[in-house]
Image 1: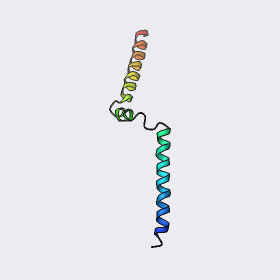
Image 2 (image 1 turned 30 degrees about the vertical axis):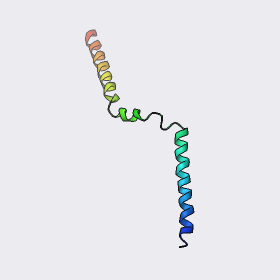
Image 3 (image 1 turned 90 degrees about the horizontal axis):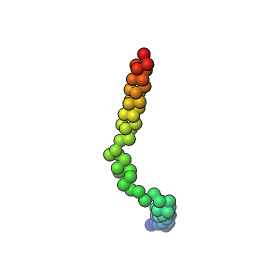
Length: 68
């Protein structure tokens, strides 16, 4: 029975910490853009950058071949 005297205040402290973290997240705009991260997995930007790099390399090779 005496353990309840420890567990109830401990539970109140943990709930208080959780509520304060939630309100901090709301105030710091953590929940403003929920869709961006979901869409970022669908659109791979790395492929576009690789294509640009290979096209630039091909252009450099073509320029050096034309000068020969």
